[in-house]
Amino acid sequence: MRSIRKTFIAGVLSAVISALLLGSSATAAPQEDSVEIAAAADIVRIATAEVGYKERANNCNKYSDDCAAWCGMFARWVWKKAGVTKLPPAGYGKAWVATYWAKWGADNDLLKRRPAGTRGGNPKAGDAIVFGTPGSLNGHVGIVVKVHSDGKLTTIDGNLSDKVTKRTIDPKTTTTNGGAVYGYVKPKF
Image 1 (cartoon, one colour):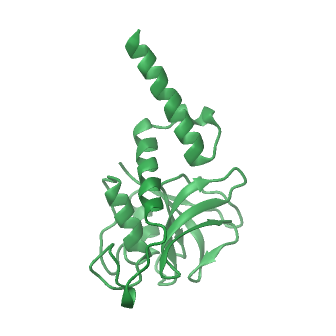
Image 2 (image 1 turned 30 degrees about the vertical axis):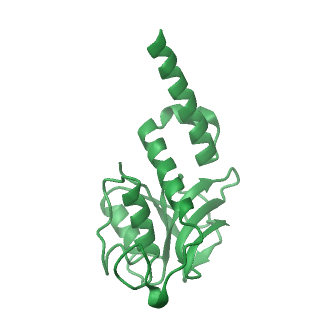
Image 3 (image 1 turned 180 degrees about the horizontal axis):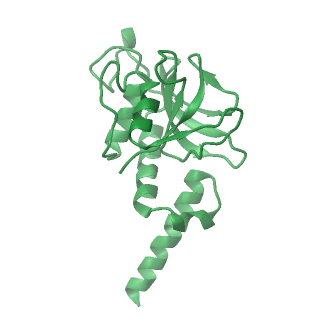
């Protein structure tokens, strides 16, 4: 009886955490894998703790030894620290280029495209949000930390105004660094 009670309590806690993180009703939570919910909570917690961090001179930052545009460095660092097992490769021409995230996500069956003119794409807390089209050097990547019931998103972005910034956006209309929201890359645990 005690193990049944523990299982029930764990299920209820997962539902509550899912509803808080994903901005959805608690009825959707039982379908979610509890490991992924906990890992998404870790991504959100780690990213949130970094809000306000400012880069040093010349784009130097604590997320990599490379001094360059660092939104991708930040997103990869957060995922790695949260225990994501499949990460985009570090470096120039790879995870340091924001739009590479979409190509990498597509190559690994982790990309969820946002249909043009919509707020769709099924983003979830913990996903990387990619602005700009693959192959373009214009773009940006951040971390989704909350999906609101109206389809807007709260994100935490590295290298936005030279710091880690939390903001709420409309994925249908917001552009960053010359790119519209292309889609979302889900973390693999």
